[in-house]
Length: 234
Ligand SMILES: [Ca+2]
Ligand SMILES: [Ca+2]
Ligand SMILES: [Ca+2]
Image (spheres, helix red, strand yellow):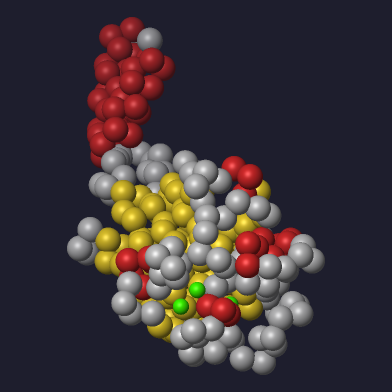
């Protein structure tokens, strides 16, 4: 009887701890429209007007055979090509205007850093030809560490699960996400194995269960009742 009451109060208490309201979409295709550019780091979204900032950056795998062993690459926003979506890519220099190196290719890593923990629920990708991504494995690494190999990425996702280039619904919870193209997971290279991150949909992280004021109050009342019962029995 007592256990059931405590459980009921705990459930009621959790219901009060709601996650930040709303889902947000970070639309890199829209961000790039008419304003294609390279950046070392750039903040893109102030979600909900005040709550969540997202900063995009780039780095290279340090053990890779790519051409970035000396200088770090730049993040890049690539505009439409032939009317087809591009988005967030990585450029080896600060200028990829008219260059095919503007996407995330072999050993390049695109990074999104949020200023609070979020849950990513879907991601859309385009490939180097600005078509939907359908082949290979995309690496998404969550957390603060910087893996130096593709194998070190903790969320390698087979793109066979993508529909129209969209990965979702998924649940990736972190404040830092790193993206690696299919090219980095094998010897094959080609435009179909490069990626742009076209858009990311996310919401505030699910609440971590913790005693709330309501639960503590409920437990206090139960304690008083139990004490009263013990006193009567004595
Ligand atoms: Ca392009
Ligand atoms: Ca371009
Ligand atoms: Ca590139």
